[in-house]
Length: 376
Image: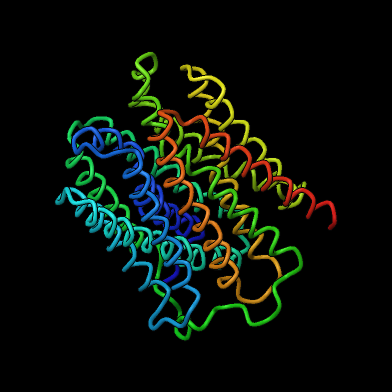
């Protein structure tokens, strides 16, 4: 079955919306009412977030070994597991169960990213329509914005999880209509890199891991931070929607600039902008500052994610092993971030310390990428 490049890009967008925009990030707006209803500590909330990112790391590693079946079959299974796991979050109050469910959700998210990207981006490139990849990556912001708007209309944390599951299920069903089956002979093979990694890959992977640590602290706790400040608490229903709206169109901008300036130089600039966004919320906690943080971090999150994947695709050959390694580095940074921030949040009553740690990580990521680009 042949599909137009635009249909493929839209299918990729919906896959990313379901598996990442909703599956990974809906925890942020659900977190404050969930913590309040269940009496969870910030450390426990951070641990649940970290469990999701442990799963993300495991999913990335799983995608780098020999797997039976087709890429589309694994994508379909991941989308189904994602929706099921979201619904199951509403059916328990047990911390161990939350950890296991978010672990499984993280595995599903990584598999969705890697196989949706491989299916859609490869086909778009073959059709000479690589620029439509920006639509594919915009799905994360679309999923964040839609799920945030949905959650904002609800009041019970259980209903929020169930509604998010239904939204992810609907998006996943549409993916099956828009992304056709693999061609005969395109079954998954061992995809780990056998040849030496391309020059400059390791600094980029390290920068990607630091980016994972740097963004996730704000991305996990920004809504809780707003809710905990009476002067700006009224922004709670809107701040995560702003984050997603800023993320959706950003990939087109940053990838266009990367075509002019180079991937690594653009990665550095975007990392510095994201560091500024995090620093704003650490310096001032006002309505203007949290809006600026949402726009700056939201507007750079998927740009950095896409630039990292683009950098991994350089070097020729099958890029999926390199994408998996980049995703693993990214996942490692995400595992540490929420637990570290939640522990300090409980200890000090403030996110200022974790936010400055995030700023430092993002600046170092930018410097690594900048100096690598300067060396050529």
